Image (cartoon, rainbow, N blue to C red; front, side, top):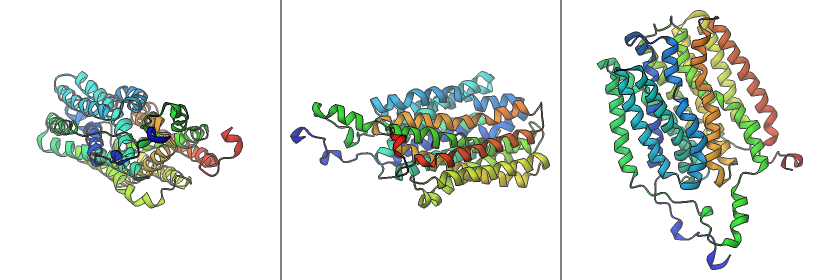
Length: 411
């Protein structure tokens, strides 16, 4: 390529530490889950029905889905920093709108939609940014850990503040101030494109662009191996912290303390297990995905016991196991995506992965619809059957892993 080749010189030095965008994931995750520990509180103190409280929680998918759908490709094209800043801004707006829930329920719904926009943009833009400035497979672990840490910190802070002050508005204000401060700091951060994207020779543009796309074989690996496991990433988290408390009490009767503990335990376990499983994270094998689905199935079976007995102790155990499943599946799934995606498709495929992950976030709302019509055990049993079916599909799709792809798959 001569003197006009790819810029691989000293100018390629990274100028941003990974933890700067990593903390953005913590803050947006905090925003995403600060409401969920307050579900029972809103039912008891603000007189929301179980369905309304669950619907408020799930309404942030209205912001999440378009952010994941369009944010990834746009971040691939225009850079990660602008969308990282937008994610933080939407998180601030989300907390401010939630504060308006004191006056009208519409504020709760609007706040959750803004929260979803912020979380969705963070998951595609910030995750890929962390990946691009981290060596090897460390990017997936770092991004997943920061996301899970935010999911655990948020409900712990909001539950503690509301438990002592009876004011969710104060909890939302604390988040808004912290996030706004970090947003101002991130204005000074520098985003640098990876060296592979800095092409200056037009003669090499077309071949380079082709090499940066995701291969057909890897797209099949994505759709047939990764996506079947994706709904259980946040499906297990949501059932662990929202459905379990509902199973241990009559609608709206679960205590704020128990609800807060289940959220913190579920998401805390999800974060804590990630560094422990890092040594077993081999993207050329299907084992970690299968282990994650197996743990998810065990968690659902424990929930089945809770649905029949109402035991809070078994419910807490179910939350622990559900959190472990969430952490394992998040690391395993995200590692596969970041490994198989071409540089030009990184944000897009990350967004599609998270879109499928958040299918599981509808489980609590579906549970609230189901409960008046039939016994909760039937709902949990149906989830267990679907989880087992996902395990079968992932096992069958192991042939699409690197080094095991037969010739006819790549044609």
